[in-house]
Image (cartoon, rainbow, N blue to C red; front, side, top):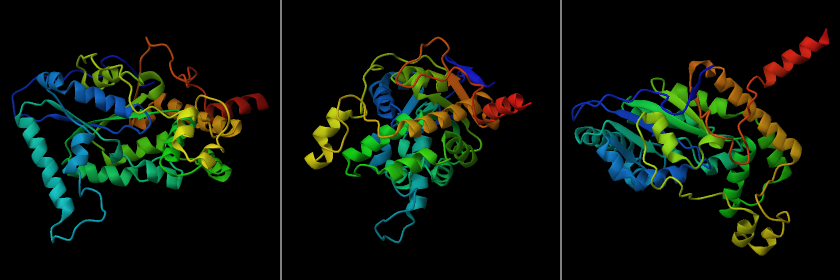
Length: 331
């Protein structure tokens, strides 16, 4: 098994001279996995981390023009190649960071992996992750050394994503759409495989939301191998809106279609939720078994289960194991 125990799953990088090659760490989220909380923590501790050699680029920087042009899209006709300009812009900023003494640069931008709108429209987990990340990998000139990816049980991830969409005008999903999501074979294993193919030289660290949510300092220490500050580590941002919050955000006619009661909105039927949880259990088992050498699953053996979907302790469970049990009993 390649389950890496937190803390310190990788050795700390040896300190060097200004201008030497630095580690480039991409934090891909995913969305709805306490990513905004992590970015807030990094931003609030940026000066302290910089003194230790850790730099940070977050959405305040990446969405202010730094990444503009990497992905194809509408642009003003200027006769210039927007992608070429974006690549040059990123590499110039990488050089500046290295010359300033940064030994490890953490870039946190969940939209590198994909967009929430695309996930909701296609009812699939990050269907274009591979193509998008290949473009970012080329823009970073092959300097990406590590990738940090948070995953979450699909039943709660999709419930959170659908709540996000509902608050932004996507409307209530139909039972056909929910059934399509529940039966879609694409899971985190497929996303991780796409990431590995797009960034073949990077180490991929997978941190389950159920263990690391609300613990940004643990996530940072995991991928850097350095002590992380605890200041601002318990400030939670952008939580999933519950039923009461959704009713306050929606028009009265739409709010009336929500189920009665309080607490988390759970749009899936029990059978659909079970199918999604089983898919997540299969993904965790694949990761614990080595993930075909593509990624490392990080666990904290000293932390008790937290959240509404505790980690599955039985990692021998899954499609292949269930089939073996049936075959063993058939004789």
